[in-house]
Each structure stands twice: as structure tokens, then as C-alpha cells.
Image 1: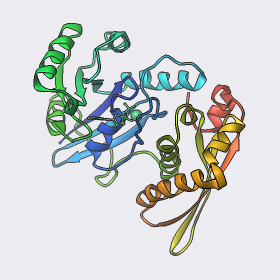
Image 2: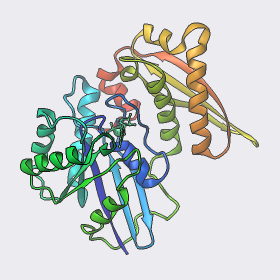
Image 3: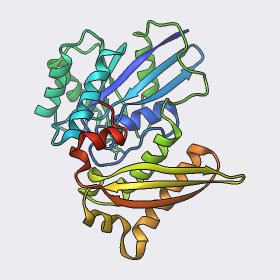
Image 4: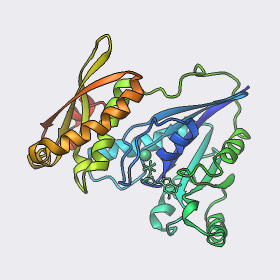
Length: 292
Ligand SMILES: Nc1nc2c(ncn2[C@@H]2O[C@H](COP(=O)(O)OP(=O)(O)O)[C@@H](O)[C@H]2O)c(=O)[nH]1
Ligand SMILES: [Mg+2]
């Protein structure tokens, strides 16, 4: 029996959360084509016959423009110190630019093994991939380099095998049937936020957070009440939409996910509230569950 902790780090939008979901085999971290989808550390647990690996998905490392951004970065860096192995996920289909080098630079201080995960190889030819690998080899002395496609589940088994080489513990941290340390409440809020991320455009998603107002379990159905918090009045209108159509659409999509999380039938009620500038107020950030 081998076990250990692995942190998944990298810039926003490279596919960290998609990778976590593929490894765990269930959706535990929300994903979208917009950067900064993930705001908190999310643990996902991988089990096989002789191994347990606790993966920690992190918000992407980026240039913060508000206090929420600061906390997100701090969480990403914090997770570097506490694990056995680091997975540095990079988008192989994009140029290796200064932003990527900035993240690699940050890692040069760690003594932990850093495995470079070159993701999105489904978008590359073999020749392009070989060139990429050579390019990255010149930048840092990675413990290993593993090309994968998190979305197409390509070569992810190989990644698990490589990680196993670096695991040193031999205790089980979680029961076999536990796949995440995130609470149902947290996952429900995230499901609503994901639905908003995927059904609205541009700036809307960044200004949104969700909190549970109430959950009532009845015999055949669970009633879930979620508040959607935005920082400007006009965003409220966008999310609700003409005659409430947008909000309805958001609700239908989110309810499907929440039913999977709770494993029962769900009645979902969403309520949109304005809380001006919540992303910059320390008090609200703490109240809304963003840890320092
Ligand atoms: N083509 C392709 N797209 C991917 C792959 N992995 C993730 N994506 C997409 O990249 C976007 C960002 O993914 P996400 O997991 O939210 O990135 P994160 O911000 O690093 O957690 C989403 O639209 C994913 O569907 C992959 O292997 N191939
Ligand atoms: Mg993410």
C-alpha cells in the first residue's frame, strides 16, 4: 500500500480541474472555458488496489486584480509546501510564454519533484508534441514529463504510474468510497456557479458567488435554496434574463448536477442578490467561505 498527496498547479484554463475529474472518475471540480473557474482548493481522492492518492486542485496562478485574486494565488502557493509531488499542468497547444515561465520560476524554489503534465495533446500532431517536449526540457529540470489529454482521457493511466514512483506514505487517509473532501454544500454552490459560467458571457462569471440559503430534506425530494451573489445591479438583470428565462435555464442545468451530488430528486430555487464589491471586502470573502 502506497499513498501520498499531489498538488495540481499551473495557470488558469490549462485543464487542471478537468484532469482531477478524469482521475477521480466523477465530476468534483467544476470546469469552464473561462479562466479562474476554480477559486478554492479541492481535494479529489484516487484509489486502486494498492494505492491512494489525494489530489489537490488549485486556482490557477495569475496576476491578481482584487482581494479575491490574492487569496486564490495564496491558496495555490500554499498547496505547494504540503504535498509529496507537484503536477505542473501546461497547455501544450499554446506557446510557452512569459506567463508560463513565471510559474516555472516560482517552482524553482521547491525541493519537491515536479512532474510536467503537457495537457491538450489532442490538439497537436506528434511532431508538434516532440518539439514542445524539447522546448520544456530546456527550461527546467522536471522529474518527469507526461503528455496527456485530460479531456479525452489519453495517457492519464501513465501519469498515475509515474506519480506512484514518488509516493512514500503507506497509510490510507480516506475511506475507499470517499472521492472528495468537499462538502455537499460546497459542491452544490459550485454546480450553480458552473451553470452560470457556462451560460453567461464575459465579465459575469467573475462577479458571481453562491451560498446555500437552506436545504430541506423531505421523503422523496430535497429542497435546495441557493443565493446567487453579484456585485452590480445590472449583472442581476443579465443572470435573471428576460422574463426570468436565463435563471430558469441556469437552474435546470444546475439541478441535474445537484441530483447527481445528492443522489436524490431535487427541487432547486435560486435567488439573485446584489452585494456591492464583495470581491474586495475582506469581511465578505471570509463570510462567503474564502479562506485566508
Ligand atoms: N482540447 C482539450 N481541451 C481541454 C483539455 N483539458 C481541458 N480542456 C478544456 O480547457 C478548458 C479549461 O479547463 P479547466 O479544467 O476548467 O481548466 P483549469 O482552469 O486549469 O482548472 C475547458 O473548456 C476544458 O474543457 C484537453 O485535454 N483537451
Ligand atoms: Mg480549475
